[in-house]
Image 1 (cartoon, helix red, strand yellow):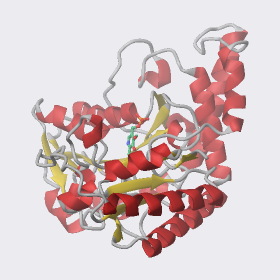
Image 2 (cartoon, rainbow, N blue to C red):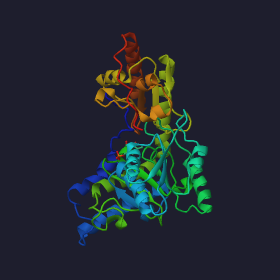
Image 3 (tube, rainbow, N blue to C red):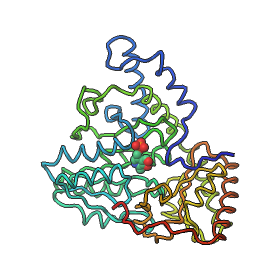
Image 4 (cartoon, rainbow, N blue to C red):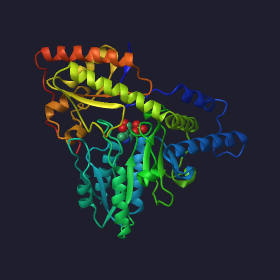
Length: 399
Ligand code: PLP
């Protein structure tokens, strides 16, 4: 049996998405910038997708910029705001648990004269509003805080953060912008940019049963943003380059499915995730669930297995056809332990023994039952064996 429990890494495309995309690989191959009818049909398909993406997050179509994925959306948001507003300030606030697409962009900007504050998080993975309030300075131009974390699933109080920012704006700090990386949240929880109060929001199709290599950045109307790519005037001059028509159509279809099936999908995933967790924690001794148990997306469970090497467990499960992921990647040649789990305050040992299980819309109870039986048997066997050689976790974390 093959069981894919790594849906936070990527998901299978929905059959409806594949079907919607197919015509755009052959017959409907027009360039959306062309004047002839091939081009016009491609353009119409792109605009339909834009309306779907906008509807998913309660934005207007003109506020959606199609990009190549979550990484580009994050780069465009952070660098785009930094470069466009550097005359107003050089300070950026983010957190220690962001995806590298945000962290590495911030680090690059530090080399270009910007100052970055990396906020810590609690054991549950949450940022403190007091810490944030203290970090905001007169020259802060951007606050970039993810909506849901990719390793533990913790959901940050973005609406409260937005409330704090609008108070600061009311005091005259109108250069402040709020970006949220919602790559792991879209399609898992309801999303409304007006309610969230964000200026920019990143999403990526392949995390919610759409194709890889396509995503979108929501940019609130009136937001000044520098561009990353120079060329033609595509995407209202925000992102040059011939549009990936098939990808955009796929993203549009995935967005439609995410909106119309949201409650059914999330309750299905939550039920199976909670079942997995309750069986695992009752069957296997000394297991801890990481991150906030309530404020998290419905499809992620991150657990630490005391006295078990996560990599060995991952490999044992892979041999039985089950795909999961680990926060400590010493077997893959990288010695970087998870910067997220470290920021949550987990010990070296706990980080080493942690696994992430991430469910998708197509995960079944039979698959979860199979995963539970393989997991409990493998964890027991690994614990019985003499301790495996320590992987060197003395290296500093990503930050
Ligand atoms: N942000 C988060 C939170 C992610 O989990 C990911 C993907 O792992 C990304 C950004 C990058 O998205 P993409 O794979 O589309 O570049």
